Structures are given as structure tokens and as C-alpha cells.
Length: 540
Image (cartoon, rainbow, N blue to C red):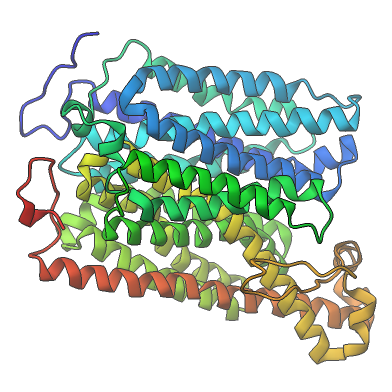
């Protein structure tokens, strides 16, 4: 395969086909967003067609998160070894295979069979998405080495664009067509990215051009980064093996910690027992927080704002905030160069706005105030994900595709294992606490009998309001509810508000971390892009 044409030094991209590859990646992630949004809109249809329980539906959606994590981490580890083109081709095949599997579940399919079909269809779909992001992130970082923050934000503008398009498709088609037809729309950007990538030459990352081995690329990740991945994977393995054993069995813990421990030992051996970079360790921790507050909150925000106002308005607010994110991600270059904020300065500002926005939503009482507060939150979360990838790529060129792929996997795994479940835990906890305050006699009537835990080493098990009973009350007009039912609704709503206040502690923590990083970079002469051959004083 011949090398791509090198562009003049003043060109934004390093190859003649840089923009074509950028927009190929754009359509690849667009397919992920469209499928994610449409899938979220047809979950009730799947429950009605196949008689699934809420837990089964939750398992199917969870397969989408875990599949992505495995796709991006595995893809990132082998990307520099086998090349971008082979991974794109594999992802393209996985996308069509996932569609073939998923569409084979028809209304008359046996429920058990339908569950397996949709579970593995979702896993393969997400695995393809993760594999593509393992390509797109380092590819764009390589193509635009002098302006990674700007172009990675453009690349990831496709995610909220996909959420908007998918949401509008679901709203427009509704029950007028089958869910298979709705899901089929994700194949349109799949075909487009396939055509854009087809026959193209791909540049090599700086690490790949230098001929670094996998162990050398993982050196800065080290045992420290491996610990974070191992912890999140242990939670994932426990969620997979837990249902097969009794609730009080320690076997799932033994299996999950054993598998995670093996992976950690393997990382230590491959990196020659390197502890890794402390700065990269901090970036990984922070990206786990981003996954929890951005994607984790997105799993709940429609439900919460829908409770504050009405379900339709909650969905429209989600489309509105996604549109804001899409538009703003084209402005990173303006913010960085015209306003003068470094990538760390952008992240610090975003963390402050996200914290403020979540607190404002928690106290808003009218549609206008909720919309204004949601706007503040949307602006805050806009630049988190792509700018963090840019920072990792800027500061750790020796890691090639590895570090930013692991970072993406950490963020997604955190959303699935910490963000979504954590917010659900606090939502249950606060709603029951508020009902206790209003009328403790009602608690035993409306709470579920079995307590659920979240990170049991930190938080105590709690009960929640029984979903069916709460749903029946919500279906009633406000004037038709009894005083008892109104107390339950008020307790649930106040629980939502309390949950958002707790959620705001995550970006508040991130703001402290970014402030420390800002002071750190100031102490070493400012934020700079590091190259593999940089003198030691530039690499910290």
C-alpha cells in the first residue's frame, strides 16, 4: 500500500485526503448516535412484542455499552499493529452482521430466542461502534497534529447529531412503521462511511512510524492505568456472572476479581512493571467521571425533566441540548485561538458550567427555567469527551492509539457501571426518603420489598418506589389523583431534584482536578504539544 500524499507544512491536515477521512469518521460515529437514539425509543415496543421484563430490556441496552468498551479497547491495542484500514473493514462487516441478527427477531419469535437475538445483535452493533472509534480518534489525532482539540471536537459533533436525527426519526415514525424499519436507518451512514473510507490511504501514528512495540506504547499507561480498567471490568464481570449464582454467593466476586487480576498482571508484564504516568492516571480517572456525568446523566435526564414537566417536553429538551452540543463542537478552534483558552482551560470552564447547570435544573420549576438550565448544562458537557482525547494525544504521543482508546473505553464503562446505576440508586434512595418525610405510613405500600445495592463497599442497600404503582399514578391527570397519590408523585419529583444535586458533585470534583492541572501546566511553562523526540524537560 502506497503512502498518502504529504501536504505542505501550513496545511491543517498532513495528507491530501485528511478531510475525506475526517468526515468518514464523522459518519461512522453518526451511525452510532442514530442507532443509540432509535434503540432507546423502541425499548417499549420490544417489551410489548416479546413480553420482556424491564431487567431483560436493561440487559439488552447494557450489551450496547459493554460491546463498545470491548471494541474500542481491543481495537486500540491492535490498531497500530494491523493498520486502520483492516479495522474499518471489520467494523463495517460487524455493523451489517449486527443488523442481520437484530432484524431476525420478529413478532412471533419465541421470547427466549428473541432475547438472545437482540442481546447479541446489540453487543455486535456496539462492538462495531467501539472498533470504529478506536480508528477514528487516533486517525484524526494523527491527521491534524497541530489542532487536535478542534478536529476531534468536529469528529465528535457527529454523536449529538446522531442523537438528534435518531430522536426525530423515532418521533416522526412512531408506531406507523415496524421497529426494524426504524433501526434500518442506521445503515445509511454505515454505507456512507464505507464509501468514504473505501480505497483510501491511511497515515501511521507517530508511535507507529517510530516502530514502537505494544509494551512501549503501554508504558505510560502502566499498572496505574491498568488498575482503573481492572476495577471497571470487575464490575462488568460481576454483572455478567452475578445472575447465575445466589444473591449471597461470593463466587461472582471471585470470578470477576480473578479475571480482572489476570488482565492487570498481563499489563504489568507487557509494560515491564511500569507504574505508568501519574498525569495519564489522573486523566483516566477524570474521564471515568466524564463518562458518569455525561453519558450516565443522558440515560436519566429525559426521564427526570419529563417528570418535572411532561414526557414529551423531556424528549424535546434532550433533542434541544443535543443540537446545542452539535453546533458548539465546531467552535473549539475559535475558543482556543480567539478567546485564548488552552484545552485545560476549556475543560475547567465546562466543568464549572456543568455543575452550575445541574444545580439550576434541580431547582427550576417552569418550562422556560428548565430549558435555560438545560442550556447551561449542555454547554458545560459539550467539550468534555473530545477535548480529553486531544489532551491525552497531545501529551502522550508514545502511546499511539492505545491511550485514547483505553480512555474512551474507561468513559463508556464508567457510564454503564457507575453513572447510570449510580443515578438510579440515588433516585430510589431520595424518593423513599422524601416519602418518609411526607407520610411514613405510605412507604411500605409503595416501596419495593427487596433492597438493591450500588458499590456495596461504599453505599448501603436501599429500596425504591415500585415502578408499576408509580407508573399507574403518573398516567392519571393531576386533578384525578388522591392526596395520597399526590404525595407519592411529589416525593418522586423531589427525589429527582435531589439526585441532580448529587450528580453535580461529579463536575465539581472535575473542576478541582482541572484547576490543579491548570496550575501544574503553568508551573512547567504552559500547555504544549509533546512529540516523541521532545527533550526530557518537555515531558512530565
